[in-house]
Length: 504
Image 1 (cartoon, one colour):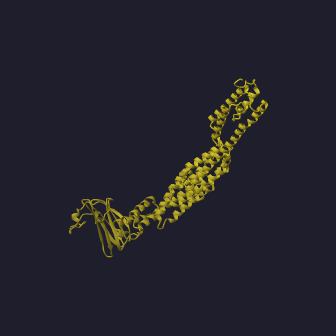
Image 2: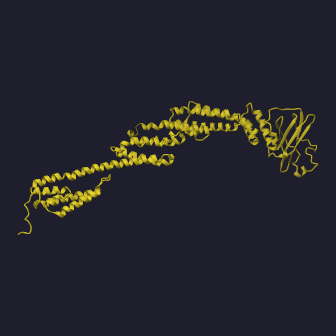
Image 3: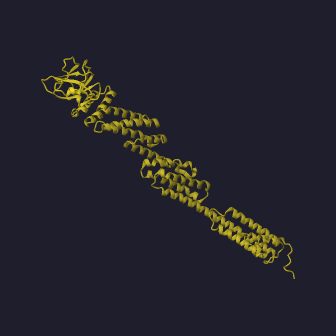
């Protein structure tokens, strides 16, 4: 008896049947030719593939593993064909039936591949939906943050939207992007809805750049959504700054005029600026004159900056600037009066001196000169500043002022009348030592010299004098308070002491 059955005659159909059965991945071809170990090897390979591949995810099966499995199936089919060529089938006995069974079982890997592809496609869809949901959540989580803090997140989310609609245009997530984008716009522009207009400027400006990063069909009508809101925010923010004195108002109005030159908001710019100038003009003449003058000067400068940066609107800004300039200049007189009345004599003197220099023909120029003189006297004798000087002049009492000093001396006086004059230096006179002025025999202007002098007429009352040599620093040593009465002739003597300025 032979040790094994004799080999069967070659049968190509049988070989094809075994090969087809092995292509199923289950090693059934080896089962029919009684190669159990090889069949088991096919089961193990298929099991490994299933463990790795299931459940299906967006990444799918690693390409190397899938290629290896396909090679293994082809080797199994080739080896099975070789084996089945001369090996009788255990079951079914007929080759045609085996061929039919092999063809039927090919549906297993084919159907499995189709099912797996569908499952993987669904996994991809879910992964894209999850990615969209994460992006939407990030936008919601940034609510309440400043735009500068949240901007990197906003740009990251915008990148997600763009990737979905450009690289995954057929996905369910891509179809949801327009709705997410509407929410995105609303969240980014939240400060506008809260009427926080200055804060809304930056995010609305950013939203105008979004259409450049996304397909036009995705953005749709949102492309123009920020425009009116941004124009309103620029106007309202500029108006608030104009009212509060914020230096940035002209920048806001300038951006509005350049970005939306024909908008209704731009049409409001000139009236708003004009109203601010008129308000400041109304404050001139009262207790807030100095503040109003400063405001008018500021408005003049800033309106000029606005016009230079964004142009003018029918000459309206230039007209407002001109009125602010004139009113600020004219209002300096009222500011000087306010400073004088409040006891700021140094400020009043400077303000009135500037006013006199800038207005050679102003109706208040003469009195401004008087106030400047009185303010300078009051810096040495505060009592001299109790009353605002008038433009009155002359009187019934003669007062002669002599200069016993080697320097020119300016004599300032205020009281019922206010004025000033300068006496030339006394030739041959000298500055006295301080010790000389402390002696009981000290009598300036008593040397019988021909002292430079001037006689003025003053009314009855108290007149305050200050002598100022060489335009130098005035001290109390150079002052005098004279109570003038009728029937007397008064003499004032100006002299200087070494190291102390002037004296009387």
